[in-house]
Length: 559
Image 1 (tube, rainbow, N blue to C red):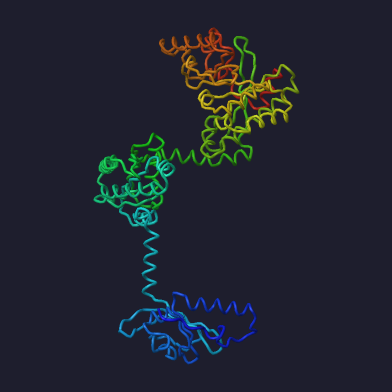
Image 2 (image 1 turned 120 degrees about the vertical axis):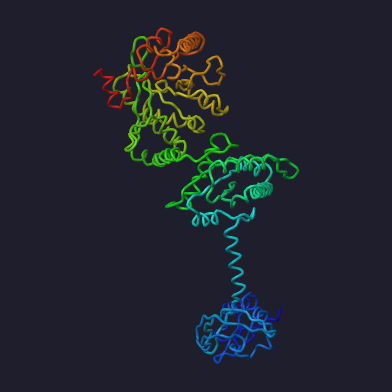
């Protein structure tokens, strides 16, 4: 590289001005930028002769600085533009001493009344760089495959019918966490290579996500052809990928979609295959699933509803209702179970189970549970103050998230204190599978609450075997069966089912600690059988629908 020269006015070159330290520092910075820039720089005088040049310009032109100094800029660069202009941005052509020509861009700007700067940009290098940047923006750096942006461009120019196959690598995060990100990259490269080998004859493959690849097949003959490709992919991936000597088995969850493209956006087309791949993951992984528009429509509706839960809680659209629990055989109200109720403006009334399922998907489950618990404690405190000791206790079903909340004891104690409600007036209902999955620390939280006087009712969902219950470490005041068991007592139940349910409930009443309760009782026949078997209390449509707080007050008044 040729030696750089100084800018006029730089230190040591007759720089004008105040000569302060700040001026010198600034001039030094300008000189350094001029000298070391990768762009060609020149300083020209009023007629256009080059007064100073930097090394990058010397390299571009192919001449040393002492040869270029004094040469008119127009003798080196040919352009139709007026090189005498004070400011200029123009295309030009450089002819080197060996006769080679290069397209350049000249940027001219004033430096002082007598001097101008010229920046020379190599258009060919810029084009190469631009092309490289475009390639980089459209290709995945790890696998070298086209990326999501490139695939969406393909979909913008696709035929009338399109086949899409999205492949998600199962458990990819486990490889990253156990073996490191380099191992994860190696796995992705191997999967990409096998996908290309299998899919290249059929279409184009791109990496469309962290652990996701998508095959685009123009005008597929039928869905069966895509399924055969997926089966070939599975067979190709059956052989382990070796990472640092460790054989890693690879399975994939795959979504298959065939779509008409008219009037559809690229993102919407890709989404159909990605949704189907997500269904494969949800349904157990290592499988393929066809896109189902009806299932998708239903899910979208649920997602829309789920996203509006936070606003509904904030606006008071979700309120708390109270289901009367009646003792057997006296049919007195002995408890009121609180549950969330949402009169949805489009989809009608939603039960707590439906609301909770939606809340789980958006992270609002704990908030929903706290709202119901707070409402229940506050209302129970008011009813106790109004009706005295004859007031039924209030029961609240804890969500799985609430049971695992580190501050559960503090939250419950705070709500009881605010409501002036004694702890023995609150019953917490916990599902059996949740109880059995709690850590010792979480069990201790419930144990502390039972020590305060709060009772815990164990709810058995969808039947099962009472004698298979494992000890949880939590003092249980009772057990409850749901409607799937109670249906076995109805007149319409098959004799074998009825006999099994009667035997199970009889055993439970005799052998389990605490009372036995029944939920979702719908007929008088069911109620009579439960009474005969010794079940302590029951609730459900037969005993009355959930009540508003006003409805509970009327019930307690006997009106």
